[in-house]
Length: 574
Image 1 (cartoon, rainbow, N blue to C red):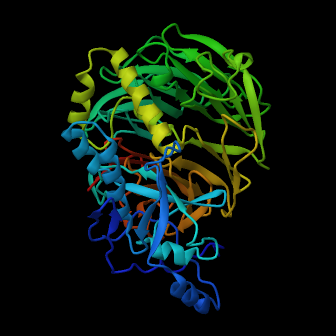
Image 2 (cartoon, rainbow, N blue to C red):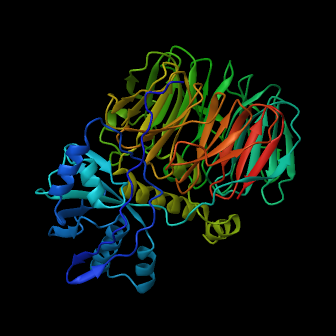
Image 3 (cartoon, helix red, strand yellow):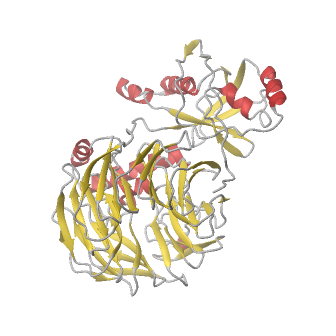
């Protein structure tokens, strides 16, 4: 494919090391290569003279003002910093200013010192992430839009402290299914792995030994969709081609109650209510969407249908229960609908007035796509999936930390605290959504506030299969039949880069829990590992004998599971 987004060489890093003077102290250290950057400088003809002039006019220092995502200033006065300052030295400055303001104990101070930051520069009405090595390089890249005589407003955002190691080798191949595997997924705590497919069974696997635990029979047709709840009981739900919904206990492998005839046609999506939004300590509600154009809200304890959402006029392809208490549904009728739930509070969304607080009441309809809408992704997906479980730790430590809580109610409170902390630090309190369609485009939405899209994202040359926000909400990855993966800014929708390497359609993508790696599954029988700093795959994960349909990266970051048409599951580790 002759892509219109060919990338030029990254800006070379400066070898100079600068210090940041503030309050009479000098902080800073040698700058390692920045592996988190995504913006690249595009070559422009006959611009060498302009760059030389800008370099000659660049002063030795600039004035900056630092603020967090909530708009709170870190210092009441502006700060004069050298233009040679690296982003690591800017992080050290943030640490020092926070240290002067904090009254916490030494342990908390040590914890804060380990937190890395990324910085966004405010240019006009846009925020652009600084991914060059130094401020000087950023000014040279954007010298036409910036003035060194003005105060540069920088917004700092924390990054993941932990680092996930890239998966590079297959450690286990797990046979058992007798037909193609359509879904593999890890539970919120990473203790369980489940799979479903064309052989009508749901299978649970031991993540420590990679051996089968339970083979669950109850479906009479293909298992098309599955979902884990984030509550302490880790209930698993599966839906099939006959429109039947079944709940499972992963510990015993037993069916919870009798199968529910949920829809007249096949079920396309299952989505649980996020734990932090639940009225009960254990999540009891979920939604199902179907080819019959309906979406239903279920109480899994009473096994009753609480509401039927009947606004679409064609098959509902995807449904999400968002972190702000809204339900989002995407349909073949080219629309996305936003629905209210009973627990939507006025303080979580500016549009959630008393008239829209009824369960299943239509809030707004989002229009823009010219063909059926295939996929949705939310910036809060990872938080809703993991609930109280912190990423970046082993299964045992994550489990022991949550088990130390006295009750499921405590787990719900921890999930709510995690969600609030994430929203204030990363998303500015706003839940973003991206949609993908057969019209080859994506739309970025702020669905809690506006029915109009933030931006239309173009570049794919065939239908968009799958979308995924990075866990920190900074990036969007889109997979397409055009054999490409594209990366976009999760806040503005700005195009970042195209990842090329697959020779068949890309079916699915998954992020590592630290948002530094992407893994993709393809029709070409391979999975590939990608970083954010290049367009070529870091690793190719071969071994499957047929198309790779299913993919998941465990929340603790240690394991990737792939499921294939060859009827096997492969486990990949570092």
